[in-house]
Length: 113
Image (cartoon, rainbow, N blue to C red):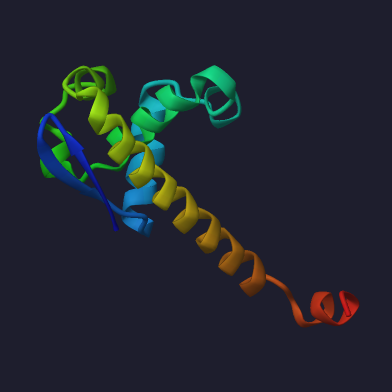
């Protein structure tokens, strides 16, 4: 779980199967493209969108759009959001590593030795 502050209010986001499904759905609804939107200048915008998409429903409904969430943030709150999304990225990569390890068949493991 990762914590952030938006408009002076604390919010928690986490990486679970359910939050991952919701995030993919919410990001698809706004036309988010991982390859395009997580590069260079767009990265900070992408992090706001990802944090918004990971909010639990009771917090998600407080912001009509990711822009509403962003405009309600203070400059100092950017840091907590970026740190929270960074923790989620770590959790995502750990989950991906576990899945790739679990998917290896016995023949693949013996071939990699």
